[in-house]
Length: 349
Ligand code: BGC
Image (tube, rainbow, N blue to C red; front, side, top):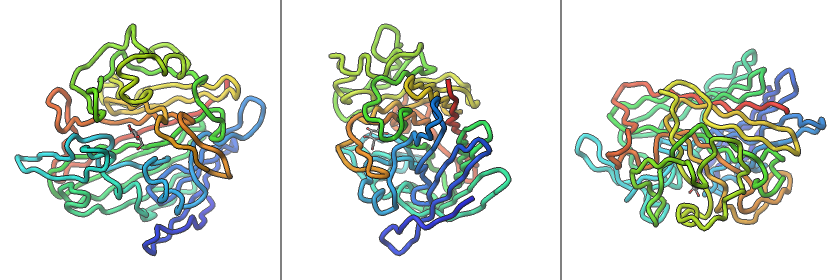
């Protein structure tokens, strides 16, 4: 496993990047800045090696483009929290309002933008474990929390992401990975022609403003949110449907039925490259975000990135679950160990 310098966080902390390669030549790069996936390279049907996630060449660029969370581990609480407030055991905690009046992805300086420590490297298993200590009331969340993320590149061409966290006070925990996939290659442009299937027969619609779910669980049948069979991502993305207008495309949580066990959440395929993604989680929801807010800018190796050039499948608890009595909330008791697994596996068709 190759370990190289990846730049700094501007506060004197050096980030490193690990390159992990399996026997098939599939290659994963992960950095300690934000415990992020930097690249995921897979041989396409014509033998061309394609990097299928968006990212940057060095830590400094990730910090300049903070708002996108490319490939990052997002926490301690992924997605939106309304009014940037949570209550635990009757005590209110104020969080940073970094997305209008909401807290988004735990604020502008969460663990997704910090340099993590390297805990273990396992050459045999092709895995790297990173850890970070998040202090009591850091970003507003109660409890000193120890967080650990392990990235494993398997021999069946999957990246497996294992999360573990424990806090010394009652708190909340909801970690996700924020990779943007483009199965034509990270420089492949608009993902509209790539096909997607989501293992969900319902989604959680948003209120007209601020992107907070209302609490309703709405069947996808007969709506542009029906991905129960493979459908082009772009097929209905511009439909004049209020939910799509609110979010400028897909930026919604889908309701999974895995019963808390690792199961398929989604599949996606690009016919031009023959790359097929299988995504698994043990969480109750997945946010489909179609990169609606990516502005034109330069990514890895001079690639051009823009609106809808990638899609995210963020495994999670439902957005704002901590404030919405209709949803089960991810409270974590003091001393309780939070664990979760996400897998993104690639095949050629
Ligand atoms: C959110 C989007 C947000 C994006 C980048 C996604 O998880 O759902 O609304 O723009 O992250 O911050």
